[in-house]
Image (cartoon, rainbow, N blue to C red):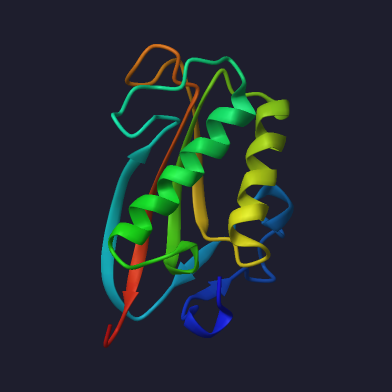
Amino acid sequence: MSATHDQRTITNPATLHDPTPFGYSHAASAPGELVFIGGQYASDAGGSPLHTDDFAAQVDLAFANLRYALEGVGLGFEHVVRLGTYIVDHDLARLEVLGKALQAAFGDRLPAQTLSGVASLALPGMLFEVDAVAVRPAGD
């Protein structure tokens, strides 16, 4: 990620708690066109889910697929201003795995995020899904 292409403004007001240890920021904005990325999960190129109970492996592949979806529209993680994350059987251990993946993808420039603990996702065996809102910089 090149910081020179990162036009996002990340805001964590002093009047609110510091959310960065939890893997998100309170607000993110950027000038330009909104791009919506649908839910990405641990799937192969044909859309078949990864058949493993390894939550970390599913998170890693879902974020790789998110990166591919962003690259498909000429964007990267540095353009993401909002994430929606969905975790089956959410607990603190899974939150820690997600936090590491977020740090790897976004460093200290974390987008706004809402995490939802869910009973199940679209396909059997899916444990994690992520969607995103990105901003194509004005003039691109």
